[in-house]
Image 1 (cartoon, rainbow, N blue to C red):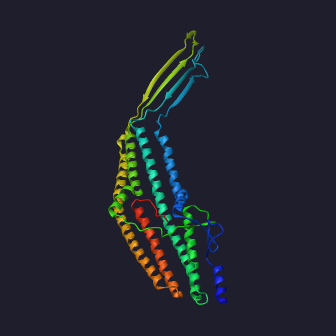
Image 2: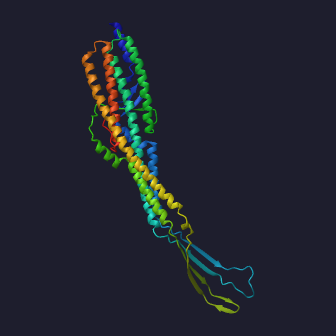
Image 3: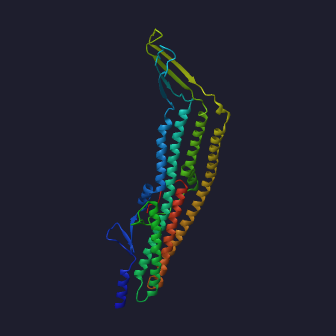
Length: 404
């Protein structure tokens, strides 16, 4: 009896999973973790992830370009001349009139150029915003998978701890040693995936993340494959991105066409000559002005390479969209099949777990270990069910995550 008490006390002092003094923290061995539910963690990913932030900056830059693209291309400039001055006068008593000349020159853009630039800038903003959403959803999906992988090892650790508490140190020391070795391995796996969780939030690694959700909250769902395909073709970010890229390519093609319209450069000048005396003659103050227009000869219209390039870019994007739409239908069907298999597996493992509890009253180490194994199988199938559900929703353009 004394031996049993001593062994149990020693075991309790070396238990891997403990609670820190702060209720917000969680400890596994010497590693401190900060719990987070899935929605909280994904919000942090959205706010702090470097790839998402880079796309936000690109979108901000596209918005900033709109004012520049919308401005008229006047290219106005003014020139001033005074003179002429002679180091030696042509003859005596010659006097230079020293006139003042001011000219103003600018550009009148070809028809439709400014409107085409404005339209292209709007399409680029839209394309960048869709690309930002595509990046955000993709990163969040990957982060959710890592969250579930981390949660799996947390639950496995807890199942080991629960089994260890039920084993008798006086009779089951070999099984205890085996489980404690498994416990160390699971603790390292938990730490490994927790580090990966931190990379998605740009986290400093003094405290690691750990999932705080419960996989038992998530219910199995029923879907109609036709509805999922329709939603995917309408709502998926990659589909919307290519459609936005096509609209941007159309705007770029229109701008290339309008850029072939010629610009004209008008100029007006004003010259004032003050009163002066030359050769004994009095010359009064005079004012002269004029107007000129420069019209370029449009030799650039002899070549269509820019138009061909822009048209081919649009056709290439349209071909990619056709391929993507076919791929989307296949991916939704595949994700639907995977989710159906995951639902079947979780039902089987739930039955097996209940049967194990019924058949094994845990009066022996074998019963305890058998029940733990059945529980781990159920944990795996529930995690896989959640992954399959997230994959099906995201593949179908439904960007929500199950509540955990």
